[in-house]
Length: 102
Image (tube, rainbow, N blue to C red; front, side):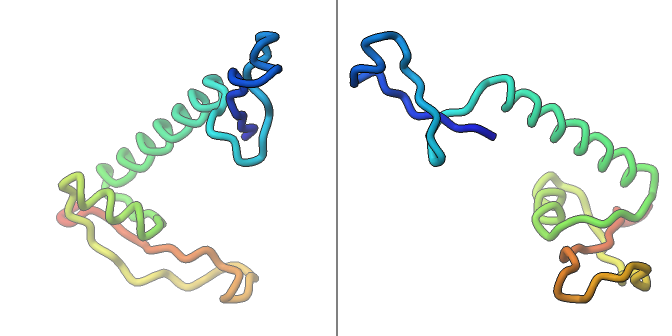
């Protein structure tokens, strides 16, 4: 995602070109943020539907903490046997969870 810095206080700002692309800029385009927020909303909706249906899902530790902070009682299950070919050190750490009582 491209980021920008505000340049209102220098010559560029004087010519109404007040945003300059920068690797560590403080600002991003609204359209990019809105697309990202929509993807997060869709993913969250899909996750909650799966959990409410009683399905077990793979999630990260942060997601478990978020679910618990929202009042969900999460049960962490043992991971099923790994079916892929990635070495252990290259696998994404995840937890296998479902809602308690589902």
